[in-house]
Image 1 (tube, rainbow, N blue to C red):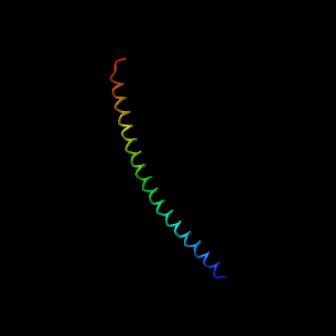
Image 2: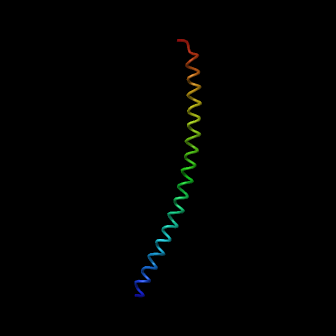
Length: 63
């Protein structure tokens, strides 16, 4: 009975460690996602501004 309990305890400890690692990794991934989302938003805004400027230039071209 004692060896089974020891094995179960070791498995539980490994499961807890893995859960903690996954939680930390998840937090890191959430932060990376937030950073990338901000970057995408900023680049989308720059792209939209460029598009407006190009359309303005094209509208002034004779033709």
